[in-house]
Length: 117
Ligand SMILES: [Zn+2]
Image (cartoon, rainbow, N blue to C red):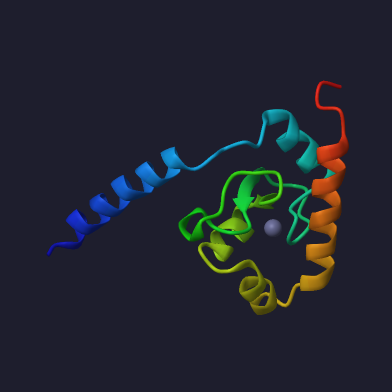
């Protein structure tokens, strides 16, 4: 089967999957997340546009929720791709424990903050 067809089918499947999952991260939460992290959650870059990175990829059942989204620069986001977060952090030799601890702290802090401020 030609791969063009296969990738088109994959794209349709992804679209359906995206429509099914809950996207409950609000714009205000996203803004608070980027402020709390102060840059890319992984490499700390502050001079680049930040993207919503799902720590557990959508393809693995992850969602766009406060507990699963961190701001990431384009290069970290592209490099991590569909890898499991811990596998990728280890591969990049980032401090896995420090990241995970900070992620929980930031998510808690944003969840507790008044969102209409
Ligand atoms: Zn980065």
